[in-house]
Amino acid sequence: MRLRIPRKISTLFPSERGQGVVEFAILVPTLLLFFLGTVDFARFLYYQTSIQAAARAAAETASNPCPTWSTCYQNQSATPTNLILWSAYCEASPAVSLQPQFTSCTPSSTSNWSPTCSTGFTCTSTCSGNICINQSTSGSSCSSTQPCVTVNVGYNFHPISPWMYPFFNNQSCGSSSQSFTLCASATGRVYY
Image (tube, rainbow, N blue to C red; front, side, top):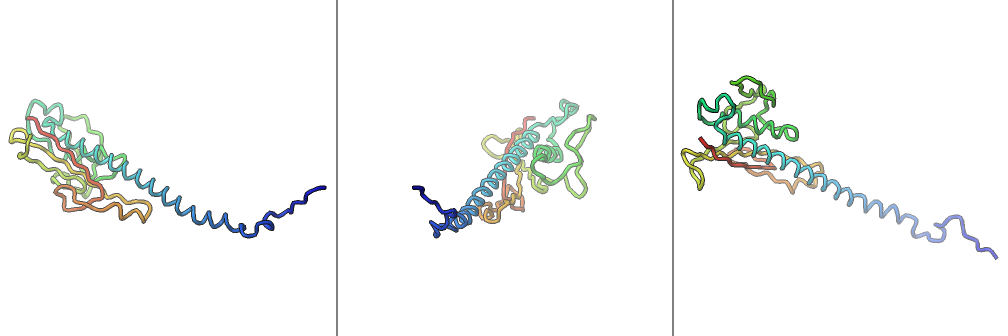
């Protein structure tokens, strides 16, 4: 004797007909939320690392009173502001677009080379765009002969998913009047 199985399984279990569609409709938005949250957090860490590296490079440049080989033994003066801003901009430039913007990240071979700003930007102020430079002689390791230079770099991070906006609040970065989502700071001591 043969057992007959109906061709349509759904006739045996009519209540399970739309169960897969309902489970899919509930599961997909939840998984999408986790996926976009993970992507936003990874982007956040990437940009934070980039601006931290920019602040560190600028503080290193600021702490060196001999920015070019030709001026190293001729004058022991502070590193020019435009060179500090250029250093931060070029360190962050592959990942983050900072202001002020410079025309090139490759120094020319001349001994009196000075980085030039792109049109519409100021490269001589101590707080320009995303980058602020503060010099101080007070503090535990700072003095008039060895001042401390603090470089603050800010960046406005915009998440992909709109429900992630509450997790990224703006904050003040150093002495800048602007507020940024991401801030990084580095301090170097100038040795004359």
